[in-house]
Image 1: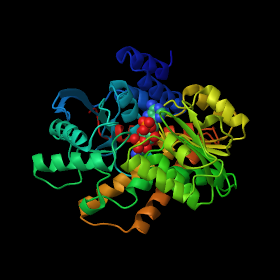
Image 2 (image 1 turned 45 degrees about the vertical axis):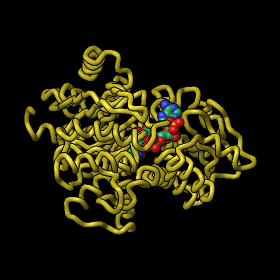
Image 3 (image 1 turned 135 degrees about the horizontal axis):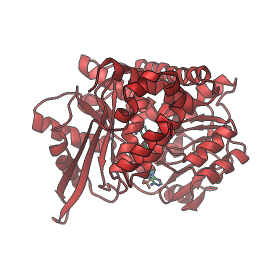
Length: 446
Ligand code: NDP
């Protein structure tokens, strides 16, 4: 058994019943094997044993009262996975499917993603099995206050800086920040994704979606193609999906789908800016279902219970959740002429699907490269907070552009260097990994 295989074996034995964590580790280990072979010092120093074991896992009870005065109890988590290159950094997810294995997969991915951004950030992730859907603002506030009452003991602007993720947007970050400030009596950049009047960065809400489109532009550019005029499918209709659509519209592409957990809308005329404004109000203010889009606009089909991958497109932007594209979906996309997939979501394509994309040599940008724009601008928010300054929109967007270009270049060149030209999975994983592994070597056995 090779070193890499023995580590995979260890991870499965030591973390039973966490299939998403196994999947994320396997994907990384499979693709970094050439770097392990080139650098025997990694095995000698047991880098993979250390890298696959979180530095710290925090689990806690979150009691709160609902609007009927009934007591509810949820479970809270924070995984502080790796701090070799900076304070732990990664989002909070509030969704009923959250458990330890999901957050460990997300925190593990975050280590390499943050490394690729070129900014000094370690990897972390957290959240709760709390479901914000159908809850009143006051219920969400009471939950967030209880969650932060415990979490505030473990985080800080130089220790661990959470952000948003599924189910955690501007509203939740506001409640969480307010409670942190109240308990700790300090106004610091302990969370990112803050409101603009109280420490947030311009372009942070847009960053993940914009970044996924910039990454797509870079991949297309490497083959002398352009995004203009391309038919695009987008899944999800939350933060990442909305700003993916906004940027694609600005660049002259046409988006024909959006979705949520109930189904997909197919709009052959395209989700133009006016329709996007409707979606933003529907999802961010009224908190309704995407099916309402089909009731409002003529010529739109609602495909109940379906995902968008059966709709013909040139480019696909999965922006909802993990494992939303399986092998059959990937084969359908390729058969229908899809030439590019840029992952706004984390691990949206399962291993069979990834294989289909790589075998067919389409432009495939894995999440940890393609969606790194979100955490990159979070890093820029931290930089602004610690200098007590606020950069203009153009400045943040310029830096986001540069960072996405640099991530593309690192992934592209590393893949070539290791003999896998055009394979952004190998390129992103090795480039992200070696920086963290070398920092761990420099810092001794900690
Ligand atoms: P939001 O909560 O704003 O939106 C999530 C969207 O995905 C909603 O439309 C939701 O539909 C849908 N969705 C969530 N879970 C499921 C599911 N199990 N099945 C089908 N649809 C689902 O989250 P974000 O837009 O912030 O996050 C989307 C993805 O992007 C996630 O994978 C996240 O980890 C990733 N990401 C986010 C970043 C950010 O900055 N926000 C940064 C990097 C990655 P419904 O409302 O019906 O649940």
